Length: 125
Ligand SMILES: [Cu+2]
Image (cartoon, rainbow, N blue to C red; front, side):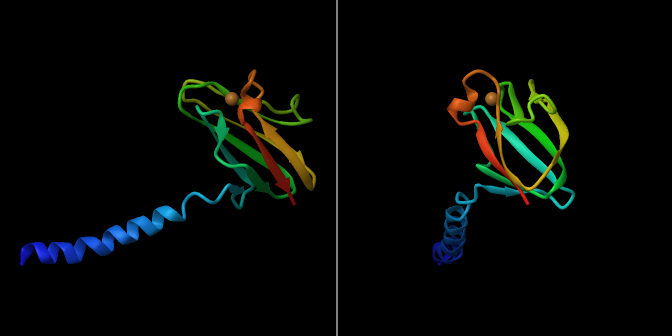
């Protein structure tokens, strides 16, 4: 009798967990917060947390975090001299750019990282 009650309770919970897990992996677009902060995380597998970031026209704040132990940077193509964020030893970094509507490319400028996948789009509208 006790086992039967346990079974009735456990099965629906497992089903709920499985269905939650199935929906988690498809969102690679990251939209800036209401104050136009784009939060980027850099992973040891040489990738960022999203393939596409979205922000609003004007002053865009970029925040870079490090997940893992590798040093990474974040720059915006054609704006490399205006902002270069660096994370190392668990640090975070942030900076701002004034951006017009358009499509931009974010990347890590450490040798080989961009080619390995540390590149993402930024859509400003
Ligand atoms: Cu990198």
